[in-house]
Length: 220
Image 1: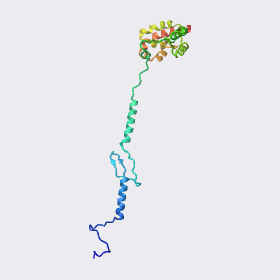
Image 2 (image 1 turned 135 degrees about the vertical axis):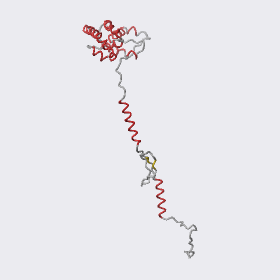
Image 3 (image 1 turned 45 degrees about the vertical axis):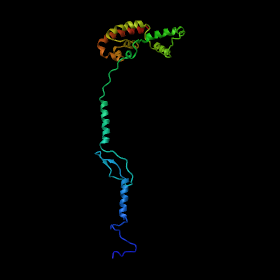
């Protein structure tokens, strides 16, 4: 009786329906959406998770969780700790002579003023020699030296400062003392930090030098 179905109707030989049911169609659609909506995510252990999906079918940007953020904070804390343990800077030292060429001589302001003044007085003669060219800064240097000079007799100042060389004081340090109207030994130590380790042996000689320089300033 089974053979007497509708006209032109026959059952498939495999016994399965050739038509897809609505349920199976929905299943296929959801599977396709699941493939399109799959997102990549790292859990707290750093493993890759590809099972979670979004309802709108769009993939999420991979996110990093767990120890990665903590690592960044740890690096910042480590760098902060290093900066706190940084070595304290050494006291300032007068190194003018070390930075200048070997054939350079340090001059006091009063010495420089006399030398530059002599050049200016002979400018007419010097200008005739094409080999001599004065720098643009000549006028400014002369004005500075004349404005800041404290003594009229540079040779007398040199004689007063000469005993300090016996205690290891350099020419640059002597010029520092002569270029400022210092009134006490403590002012000298503050002005020339390189004297820090020589205070005990320099205190008395400096007192004598400052007293003599003060007399020269009053005479001027």
